[in-house]
Structures are given as C-alpha cells and as structure tokens.
Image 1 (cartoon, rainbow, N blue to C red):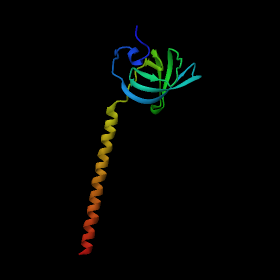
Image 2 (cartoon, rainbow, N blue to C red; image 1 turned 90 degrees about the vertical axis):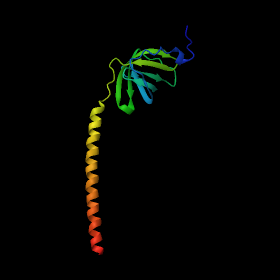
Image 3 (cartoon, rainbow, N blue to C red; image 1 turned 180 degrees about the horizontal axis):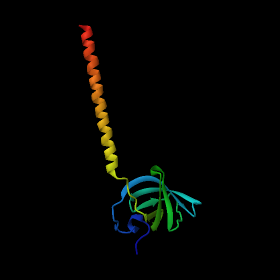
Image 4 (tube, rainbow, N blue to C red; image 1 turned 90 degrees about the horizontal axis):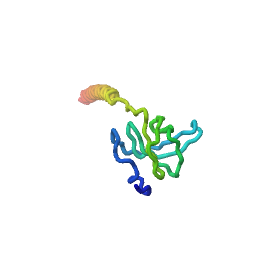
Length: 137
C-alpha cells in the first residue's frame, strides 16, 4: 500500500496525454451551486487537467468549477485524486489555447507599421538636420 504522507509518492503515475506546465496561478473553486468557495494555488496545468494545492484541508465534491482570475477563465473540473491538501483535477472540455498564428500575424503587422514610422522619422530628421546645416553656411 502506498504511503499517503508524501503527496508526490501517492499521485498517480504519469499517464497524461500532455505534460503539465509548472505554474503559480491563483485559483478559486466554486461548488454547492456556487454557494461555497475556496482559494487554491494551481501548481501545474495542462489543457486536460491541473494540480491544485489548498492551504487547509478542504472537502471538495467530485465536480467543481475552477476560476483562474489571471486568465479570467472558469473551467468545469472533475476531481481525479486527493492527497492531503492537494487535489488533481481533469477538465472534461480540454482547454484550447488561442492559436498563436493570429497573435503572430498581428505582431508582424505592428512591426511593419513601426518600421515604416521609424523610416519616416529618419527621413524627417535628415531633412531637418540638412536644412539647418545650410542655414549655418
């Protein structure tokens, strides 16, 4: 039988579809028709689940809502395991991050516009400095 003293030993072996990213996000779980709330720390997260740490022992239902204030996102979560103050949850609806291509194309457009502005400013500066040189002669 596994020891429950060390949460790392008691957690299920790595059977995840994707590795979790280490995080230090604040989280809040809501349950009991949103009448109950508890603060937690999201220590790692993937599109399919997360590991939550609570400062005190908390009794959670098998299904809860996880709110992540920094992302302004609420996710439905299913509790998979509980050990001490840690809870492992799975997201029935996988998180789909925004496609990077849209952000990359916006960034490329912005860089192009800024480069055009810099070139225009250089031309204007050159015109101003060349005009002032002729005034001194």
